[in-house]
Image 1 (tube, rainbow, N blue to C red):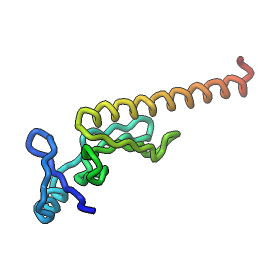
Image 2 (image 1 turned 180 degrees about the vertical axis):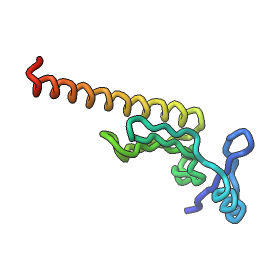
Image 3 (image 1 turned 90 degrees about the vertical axis):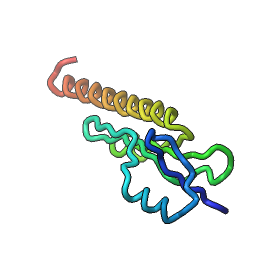
Length: 118
């Protein structure tokens, strides 16, 4: 299996980089974070992977969103384009926000019952 390596141009668009040394230099010296948000201690991160995670089986998969912490800890989704990745990041962030709202609602409800309010 031939793994394809990618870098980002100055506009943030992926370019295939066949020279593994050039790719490695770029990979370690560039910020690959597309979006990063934290909600109540839960982090949503979307990054450029730099390696085709579709392993040459069609359109390259070059972006990944992950959630760290909370109800959806370790959630992961991967994308072929920057636009898909940004949209996926927003969806993951909405998942986290909905989960946080649900938890807060349960906490309020439980607190009301403990204190004799219903």
